[in-house]
Length: 214
Image (cartoon, rainbow, N blue to C red; front, side, top):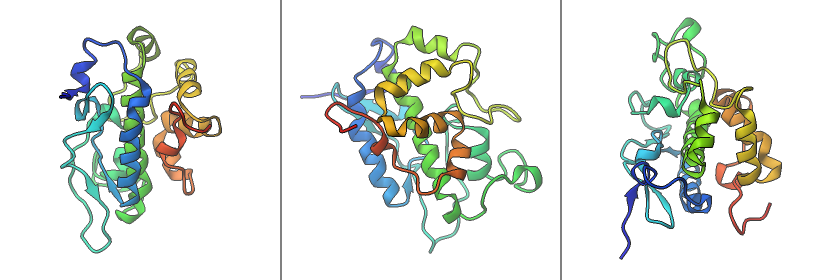
C-alpha cells in the first residue's frame, strides 16, 4: 500500500527527490494545455509525492479557455510562483484598472492562452528546481533575491545575471540540449517568452528524463 505526502512537507526532511519522478506530472500538464485548460496555482503545496511520482492536487482552481463562455474574471494564484508582468496580463487590474501603463497584455482570454501556458510552466519549473536541488546550493542561488511579487518589483523571472550559473547547471542536467535557451528564457522572463515565442514547445517535450531521447 502506498501513501502520498505533500511535496512541501516531504522536502522538510528529505534534501531532494529524483527529477524523473516529475515526468508523469509534466505530461499530465501537457494534456491539460492541449485542452486549453490551465492549473494556474502550481506550487510545492499543491503537489503530492508517493516516492515514485509527483502528482497535482487542489486543481479545482484550474482555468479553461472556452470561446463560447464569458471571459474569466477570478482565480487564485500564489504570487511567489509567478511574476508581476504575467499577472498584469492574466489579471489586468492587478495593480490598477487595466488601462494605461498597466495594460501590458491582450484583453481576451483567447489571446491570453500562451500566457496561461507559460505561467503554468514557469511555476512547474520553480517547483521542480526547488524539489530536485540540494538546499544549500539553492539558497546560494537565491541569496539576496526576493522572488515574491510586489508593486513595481519582480517584473522578471527568477534567473538573473547574479545566479545564472546555478540555473544553467540545472538546465544542462535536466533539459534537452536544443531547448536550453527556451528554458533559460522562461526562467529569466516568462512574460517576454510568452509574448515573443511563436508556437513554443510544451515543457514536457523540453525536459530530459532518464531514458528520454536528447
